[in-house]
Amino acid sequence: MSEASDRIRLPMSFDAARMLEDIRAMNLADFIEYSVMPLRSPAHLVDPSLAPPSPVDDYADGSWTEWLDTSALQASRYLSEVVDTFRAHSNVTLVRLLRLAPGGIVKEHTDPTLGLHIEKSVIRLTIPIVTNDAVEFYLNDVPVPMKAGECWYLRFTDPHRIINAGTTERINMSIDMVPNEWVRSLISRGLVGRLEDS
Image 1: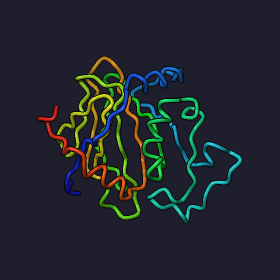
Image 2 (image 1 turned 30 degrees about the vertical axis):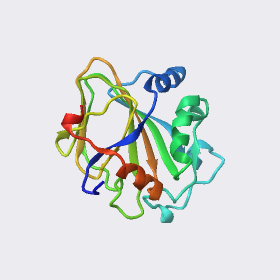
Image 3 (image 1 turned 90 degrees about the vertical axis):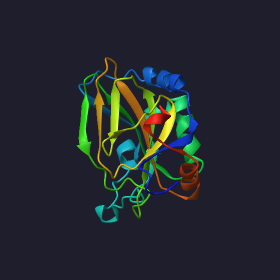
């Protein structure tokens, strides 16, 4: 894998139906356009008795704080298994469910600290759970053909945007982790995602 690759489909997949079962058990509230559900967060946000870390130590790699599973992740058996797949080998920091309503749009933006090529940073893996044929995820103006249950490394330091032109919501799980040799090896064994992969 070249670090010039902006999209890599990792050589692993997960059971999207089982992930969705856990999500349905959460009884998530209705939302308008875009919703974020934390599953793993900075420790002081999960346990209010803990003091927040000093802003002086706010490194992009997540080392500025301890990270804890939220009660939602603790109660979700299969979602926890998915996170544990990565936690067994790397320092997993932020984990979230990202929901985009039918007709919802995430405008083009960049995430300056989410890339293998950034020193003292994290990478973000994306696992689609619920999607439809009208969801369009663009990275560098080229669609990324992600299917439910697949796991992708995307170079989010580059411009990306999302359009859900379908009639159902889109739900992705995002997993941030500190890149190490295991993560780099996993990404290097992945497939460069192109339109013909779909």
